[in-house]
Image (cartoon, rainbow, N blue to C red; front, side, top):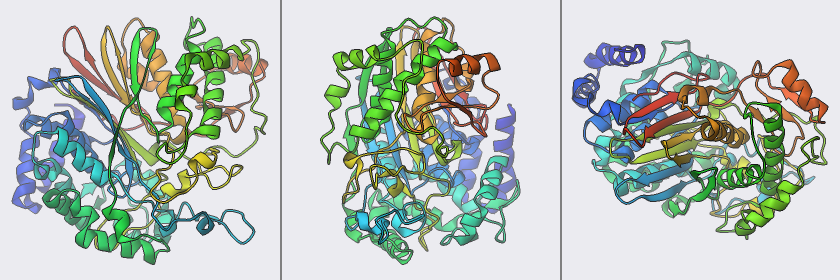
Amino acid sequence: MTGARQAVSGWWWRNLGRCRWRIAAFALGLLCWTALAAAQETAAIASAHPLATAAGRDILKRGGNAFDAAAAVAAALAVVEPYSSGLGGGGFWLLHRAADGFQVMVDGRETAPADAKLEHYLGPDGKPVRAATTQGGKAAAIPGTPAALVHVAERYGRLPLAATLAPAIALAQAGFPVDQRYARIARLRERFLQAGVGTAAIFLDNQRAPLPGYRVRQPELAMTLQSLAREGAAGFYAGRVARALVEGVNAAGGVWRPADLADYKVIEREPVRFEYRGARITSAALPSAGGIALAQSFGMLSRFRLDDVGGVETAHLVVEALRRAFQDRALHLGDADFAQVPQQRLLDPRYLERRAAGIDRSKAGGSDLPADADPPRGESANTTHFSVIDADGNRVAATLTINLLFGSGVVARGTGVLLNNEMDDFSLLDDVPNAFRLRGSAANAIAPGKRPLSSMTPTFVEDARGVLVLGTPGGSRIVSQVLLAVLAYVHSPRLDLAQIVGLPRYHHQFWPDRIEIEPGGFGDAWRAALAARGHALRIAPRQWGNMQAVFKSRDTGLAQAASDPRGADVAWY
């Protein structure tokens, strides 16, 4: 039994006496390893928390498929990773059904409430009001995760929703022990949680960041999950929970209506698909900017010969491709249900060839903007990703978020639901960047029912070797992380999944006009060579991302998983 398994099973044994019979039954199920022995070689899960991975594994053992397991993992992460995701947030779920090859992106992105207006976020001088889009009720958009979770489980899964949500309910009722990561993030956001609405009582220990081992219990969140299990989406978007959400958000300065919740719908969207050097890549569609950015970047890179994917020459070309992709994001992208987005033109091979032709292999291009702006504020912990593949080949890549760490800092009384601050992902003014230093245009302006542009990029990669399922948190840096991982996979003759998710990272997003580099990731000679080409470089204060990947071999059917060494090692296969 591995250390991760020992930690999970030991925790359940210590708490059996405190749990009700349903929790105890789930806990005992987690210990039945032998029944899963045959599936261990052909199924894999990678998530950002061992208890969430254990929840998905248990659902597979009970006869569920990858879609059931994905719903269980997402619900468990809503409990144990409250700083990253939850029922108060949203995200994108990329699905592949093995029986017929059907692929779809389930869009569970948050939406702007009907009464949200630009003037709510601007002062008398026409400038943004500090923290209006990041803290309090005005910052919260209508959540999409509960509806998406139910949709995936009920439309594509095999098990009853009550069974799928049982692990998360157990974790919320019995509590979970704080780990080092939770403790670090709570220290970082201690003042924010102290000043929040209903946050200190749940996520702090006597108004202070808890130490590792402290047990976080969320009985009100357990009740909301139970309501969801009994009633489906109506258990969140109608009735007692919906009334409490509206009252809680509006008491904190928001402008929600009951109809905002009642009218929320997930949307099934056609993913972005493209090819790169024999690999078929499937990624997120709008309102994610990620799939388009990947398709554009790889379309430009395909015009060049890349001999050493870790070398200076490749880094220069990757940066110049990202520069152009992020420029197009700023100028053109938004929710295509509300804005005219020229997606066909942006992905046209002739357009990408012209963009690639403008890349000078000997020197950096320019973004015509200063390079000394503040760095992006996001880090690995303010979004989550998980990847699942089952024995039949069904697969899910899901990236979920509440935006910044602990979202808006508002928990609606009686629900246990921590609300997002996704209104910050809209573009207020052309020259005003968001928390991730991303600029936008009118295509991403606030409008009732509109979904803000996102960087979340769940992705599938298929080639003769098999299928890779991956994604990561990291704000605007998500796109570059996924790009570098796919680049390494395609150009590597031998698969080393752990190496792919652990690669050192660099990033460029058009503005600020500089390359962000992970500390310790690249040597002096590498940096000097890029600087000699005219690139401005900045070593970030910390690493970023928490990539979760699974791979299934086409020849053997065997599966493997890997979790980013920057986070907890919680992959299972």
